[in-house]
Length: 354
Image (cartoon, rainbow, N blue to C red; front, top):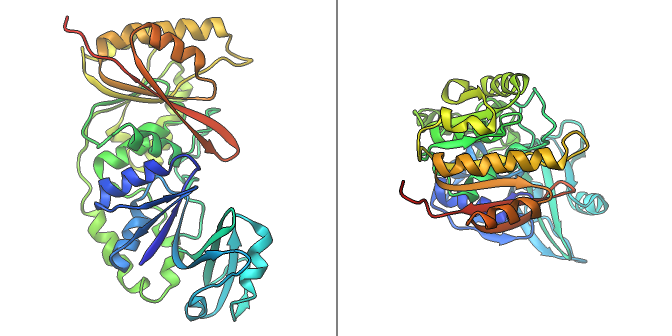
């Protein structure tokens, strides 16, 4: 069964990493999507229940090149009503005209999706029926604007396996720590959303879904240490509330902590991985103040860090220059979150013995 895993453009490698980590599967990377061959309906359901880096999951019925379009055996999947959506609204009607049945754009029995890449298309069934990039646990907002799928992608690109001691020192709404807790504990990211899955309306899936959900729920276990810090008590309270809504608040250590005092909260060399949406200069935070925070950050890293740092940024040159001056190897990955261009920086430095 061919499945399309849609994602933010530039984060396809994160999807590949998650596929290999969770399912020992290889995928085919294209622009904004990874295609994978699932073994059966049970594995397709597991993809929907567990995958944290994807925004939409589509059971592929057909692929092709414009101007010729086709919908495979779409008509065999329509029992009551249907709708066709696409990342290119201009083609929705064209694909819909090839399908027989009642159109219901509000509550369709079968939701089809056409993913258009330049002159090619991937057509299939939307198995989730909602935007997986929007996490239901994120009710208490922060101005970081970080999506759960992006936070999860950062973790997988960092090589996080759920076994390392992880720190997010600029935790914002708590997204990185919450996503990490799901990975570390093998907790399904869609635990609270499973009853809304569009696939539950489909023959061949609805009969086995409950059994798959139960089997995956039973795999949850204790995970490694996860720290989430911020210099503002309100930020910490809101992040902890989001974690409680996700069911993982007891498995994350939240604390109000200024950057320069991180070495009083963490043991020497304790932190194996730092993944964070780091603060940057803005109209509310002067560049001079941010540079001081960065200097303090690098100072405490020499004590607490035994691995690498992956800060997410919109404008990375200043931090990268400072890091290189302090002996860090740097690399930068550019990607899109919606219409926003973001950069995931990787900082690595050999730890010197005291």
